[in-house]
Length: 86
Image 1 (spheres, rainbow, N blue to C red):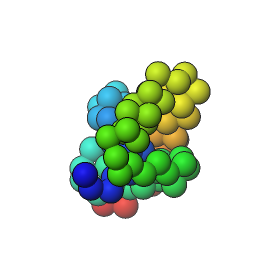
Image 2: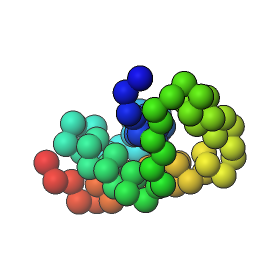
Image 3: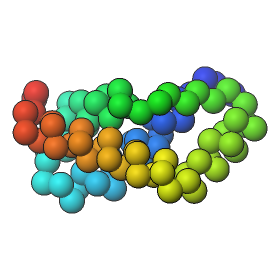
Image 4: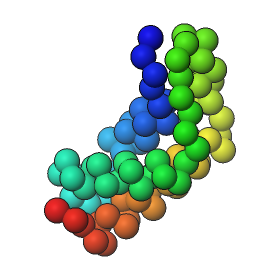
């Protein structure tokens, strides 16, 4: 198993759900800017084992975790929408 940052997957999923509804640009540059801004405001969570992946997936059911991810992504989308770098 490779080393992966589980939060990258969670944030990417959230971006895919929220970005189309936001009216913000969805070009690759803006998506990467949104992802980096959101990830910089969330705690990293690296996974190297299947057991670690299972524990990480359990966090998906934690209400506060979901609120934190959504808030970070929404804030990042708004910042990039206000000042796109493309």
